Amino acid sequence: MLPSYLLSLREGIEAALIVGIVLGALRQMRRTELVPAVWFGTLSAAALSLLGGILLTTFGLSFEGAAEQIFEGITMILAAALLTWMIFWMSRTARTLKSDIEANVHRAAFGTGKRAVFFVAFIAILREGIELALFLTASVFATNTLQTLIGAILGLGTAILLGWSIFAAILRLDLRRFFQVTGFLL
Image (cartoon, rainbow, N blue to C red; front, side, top):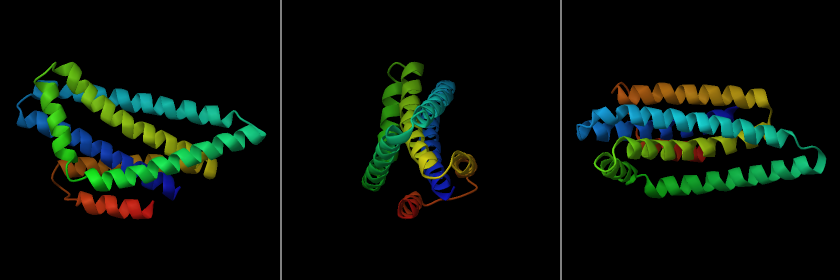
């Protein structure tokens, strides 16, 4: 349960930060009419990620015997490789992530508008969602479905609360330190 909690917390915080950066950039540009496109992109990506995770897990659970072990092994190796890459990528790009996202939002907001802003949010959140779906599928094979589900719900719930708190200026979080600590724990 703890691994799925930490993975969901980390991915949820990353998603919340991305949404917050996009919304903040739109507010700075005085393009708040594009905010619904951000939320629609975010919710669409979350729904597609959830569907992908359910399909991936259901597909994996349909195997038996050697095929099941091969699928589980491949899933776990892919999840471990993706997690390792993600930790190194985040430590390398954490300093410029905000400015990169803001630049993409600026181009989108003053380019094709709603559709482009939708896709900025959609693609960023879908990437986080696909990562989480793969991690949680591997976790189901390593532990059990109920423990993974409880950990994921608690992790995402915590991430939503932290994200809301951060953007409401109630909580100040050193993001670099957060990703170092969760990277170490993972």
